[in-house]
Image (cartoon, rainbow, N blue to C red):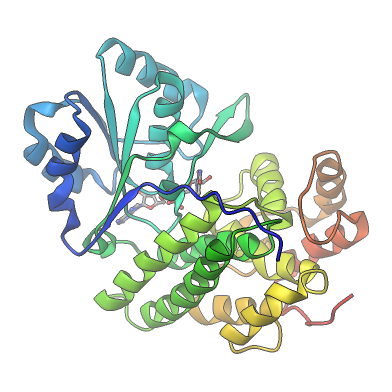
Length: 355
Ligand code: NAD
């Protein structure tokens, strides 16, 4: 046993109808001047929030841009500053929460998150923004939301394609938490439970998009997987996705879904102690095959080619990755990474052979 237990988590409310607790939570935080953030698909619920918070809402940003480009956030930051905003309430997916985090980071205000996808950003102190076409990320304790409200009813409208890919994005966080160095055993247990719950929920949802109990389970899995991301470090899978996202602007969640089985295969021999139990949970011979089978069954993305990755660039991607530090059970091996990218491009089932 070799671990550090030093976990962080927002105050978290989870219930059908939990959104009704928002005014009490804002009052408990002692906040008086709220900036509300929503996107084109969460503007309706933002309308409900405006009614319940009334005059506390000073401003409303009703659209967001993925990965928070600086030229998009700059005027919002200065307006929030001049309006004396003391709380940001973000309702939506990782893009809404992401803008809220940048305001929390730059203006030193508190954030309350009301997630509506399975991305899990609300449970982490990780911020991300785009400057000069380059995605930058970092960790800062004060961007971790003070409060998170999970109301599963807000996810009922999430379309199937976004649901399954966003769900695989959540699973990717928990998988990499499993082999993160010195990860707390409690975080590891949350990761196994999160993956199990997400896999069950995604299979049930894929059969029936109106399955409300599957939605509830998936949101519980989102909470667990997001918690593991916030309390661990990520490995080769996230390194690759960061590189691909930056170079080719591939769609975030489908890209995670397409890369994950092959990133697991890359680590399968080096992280046998944690990936074999995962294979058992997934009822598969290997974890990489179990994740690939899940992805096929639920219809999430399994091939980078489908989302516009030019495979011819695989060697360039690997060369660029080589210059950045990597914390991963198996060290960076250029040829193996090129092979991984080509396999993720083809989308063929991982063979389950250890190297
Ligand atoms: P997103 O927030 O862009 O949402 C995807 C789409 O779903 C959008 O069109 C949105 O309008 C729609 N949508 C959201 N909720 C809906 C609902 N209930 N009904 C119908 N449509 C709805 O994407 P995402 O996958 O949630 O988040 C991706 C972003 O989050 C990326 O920028 C990623 O880097 C970031 N992220 C950050 C962290 C972190 O810890 N910092 C973790 C995960 C993801």
